[in-house]
Amino acid sequence: MAKKWARQITKTIILTLTIVVSIGFLFTNLSPYLSPTSYPLMGFAALASPYFIPLLLLCIFFWLFAKPIFSLIPLVTLLIGYQQINVFFAFQLRASFTEAKKKNHIRIINWNIQSFNGLTTNKNSKKLIRNEVSESITKLNGDIVCLQEFNNSKYTNNISLFSEKYPYYFFSKDYTKNNGYSSGNIIFSKYPIIHSQKINYPKAESLIYVDIVIKNDTIRVYTTHLQSFKFKKDDYDNLEKITGQNEDAVMASKNIFRKMNPAFKRRAIQADMIQKEMLGCPYPSIICGDFNDVPNSYTYFTIKGNKQDAFLKKDFGIGRTYIALAPTLRIDYILADPQFYIHQFDMVDEGLSDHIMLVSDLQLKSK
Image (cartoon, rainbow, N blue to C red; front, side, top):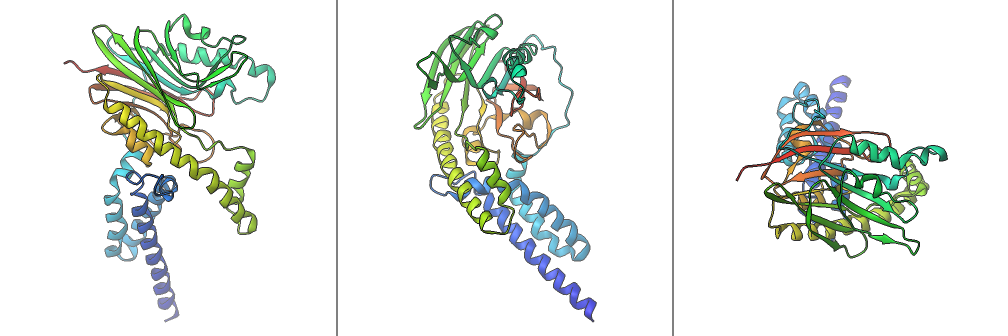
């Protein structure tokens, strides 16, 4: 009798948890459609979404053995949220990346290079980072290179590292100093740039684009670096405290919320600006960049629209692009219009940045 009672209590608890997790996941499904500017919790919901998926799978597994009819609750929940799963996890059988680029393909490289700072703390090694970054890029023989957190000055001419192979470029120069230093986004190209434009965001950073002539075709390539959380050492310490059950954990949670919430709102505004700009594009286009937001977010869905995600088209798994914090942070992207074939995609971790380099071979479809 006691065992039967215990089993019943256990099932009731797990059923309650199943319902709570299902409701939680369904709530996160709203994140692509509700802007954090009006609904602040949606930014956090997007980050939480991937963690509900394995929990729901565990619930399905449990109820298949305990009481199969209840497995329909998490199963139907996952089916409703299939769109969230499709952008989070790539289901393609991954082929090995061929470094030799085919004649009619356009190779795109996208990388947040972390201001050439690298990951080492050794001062002598840091001096070599800028050369190692440029060599890592040029050896891949890309046609168009989009870099975020790029810097240049009259004392350290980083543009010259690429100019021999990429004679055409456009630099946003979002941040400048009196000593000639500037930083921001840059697009390098092997092919002529016939037009370029910078669209400033309200607070900082920008969206830039270039129109590039390749043989008889013109394409537009965008790149951007959206608002980051700008976490410092104290913020990372607070993230560790949140798992605690004391006053420090409560205070840490409040501090992190205050830091993250404005970033979610600013990214939403920036995403709306990007969407508006791209709607008026007269050419087949590609957007690359560090969006600082996950695929389940309002930011991603707003920018992506009907574009193809190169990672989802040609890879398998979660696809982490930012090496710090959580293993689910795919925040860097190459997105291409339907007018392009996506032939290859790869993530290249050179250990030179806190972001991983993205490489993709595309081909413009015949008219």
